[in-house]
Image (tube, rainbow, N blue to C red; front, side, top):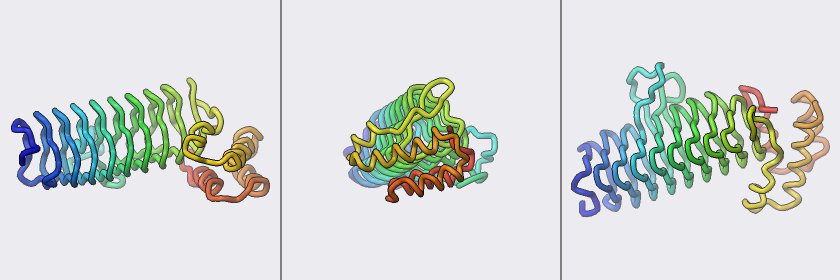
Length: 258
């Protein structure tokens, strides 16, 4: 393959589309599948079983599909699934799953994984998320879509962050973060609706106003969860966004960060 550097090491069992570009000193292990138009810069390590969709970019020194250091992992065959159009910047790492949970780690489409980010075993990442430098997701974390993690954000095991949520610099997440909301500070607390982020994503003023009303009912009126949801349903306009907000609260298992 003319687009594979002569110093790259590729296992015979790897399945690589002819259009893939592989840079110097990259290593591709067994059971790795790479779809069309992906690009590996220099010193990239890919291990399997890992299935990589089209048009992903991997920058220098990232390690993708490695065994998890979690002590529950006993060498069982687990996997990593990566969608399309993702960017993995320098020194980031993504671990495969474990038999103790899903058995896989999954990353959707069009995510930006910035330098030094860690995505641990059994995490599920949606689409179009931005994980800023040195954020770390412990095992079993779930991110929705269009989530932004500020630099150095740390997320505890089994936490869920709803779609369009936002974390400030160095946030420590130990409970679930509902969709459309911001958290920040030390200790990390709710910091309002992610209104600027929603504006940038094309939400209308009416949609944002409706979500702000729901936010204030849930977070500022000192109501029990069931009471707050009932009042939101009574006083806010029912639409798809409101349903996403309510569902991210109702489906919380660790409890919502209030």
